[in-house]
Length: 125
Image (tube, rainbow, N blue to C red):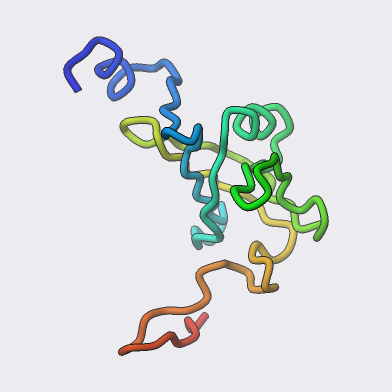
C-alpha cells in the first residue's frame, strides 16, 4: 500500500481495523501458555469493542448473525491477555487463558484432527 492511510495501517501506531465486505475480521485464539491454536472465529466492530471492554472474547456468529460471548452457555470463557494485529490490520491473534475446552465438541482446541492420506486422524497431544 502506498497511500497515507495504507502506510499508517502497515507501519504506524494507530489501530485501523480493516473489516471485510461483511464487516468482519478473522480472530484466532491462541492459548497464552502453551501457544496452541484453540479456535478461529470472526469479529465485527461490536465484538471487537466488547472484547476490549470486558477482557472476554466476543465474536460475531455468522450462523446466527449476532454477537456471541464465548462461554456464555458453556462457561468456557476465553480471557484475553493480549491482542496482536497483523500487518494490514484485517486479522487478529488473541493470546488467551481458556476456562475449559475451546471447541464446542469438548476438545481443548478446534484443531484436534490432521490430514492423513485421504482422511482425518486425531492429533497426538
